[in-house]
Length: 259
Figure 1 (cartoon, rainbow, N blue to C red):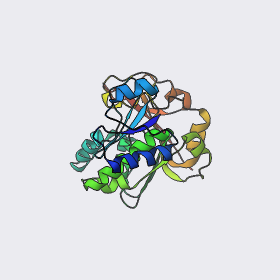
Figure 2 (figure 1 turned 180 degrees about the vertical axis):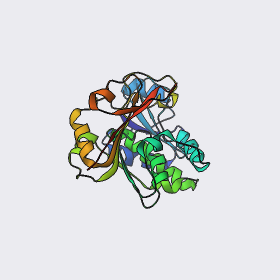
Figure 3 (figure 1 turned 30 degrees about the horizontal axis):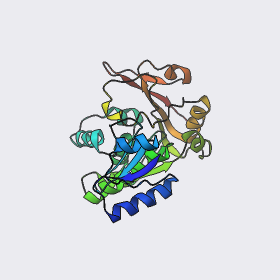
Figure 4 (figure 1 turned 90 degrees about the vertical axis):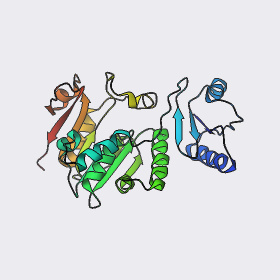
């Protein structure tokens, strides 16, 4: 990984790129009017591009950047405001004042909807194992907050933590969240998930371990929820009750808890 700036840069952006590179422990490369393709041909690494409007991340050889955007989260929150049902909220049972641990935050869409649902009295912690994705999400959130757009308050309330959820769960106290949620990368590609194309090269594909599920059941007060491909073996393997949805490429599995 290396960090550079957009082509039309300035001293302020150059300084931010240098500071970002230091923070991430990767090299800073001056843009010098070169294209991303040219820079990657030289350094043979993915890169983060610092811009005024947004921060992007390019996988090596890809022209589809990963960047923070409201996308489906904003659409879902609008639907919720209209009184429509959201499958994620139905399956997690989240409501005002509850707490959620999102073990696989990624693009933060579910964490954002969760923060919107639980309100100021609730709490949402989003874990992301990849330090670069975590950086992109935090930078994107910071810019989005500056716009003062609707749903900003919910976004602010997400506690974005760079951590491996296996370790985080292991060290979490019993019954410390109402709901523990896992949305691992699917073992099979869902063609409709075009929004994930920029994420695939950086996401973690580690399998869900039995120990993690055991700790999730200890940490959650009410339920553990798993989102996975409709053909996934994980539901049956770990004892989830599956809510099958017609024509959906993914299902939700739930383990209800009675601590």
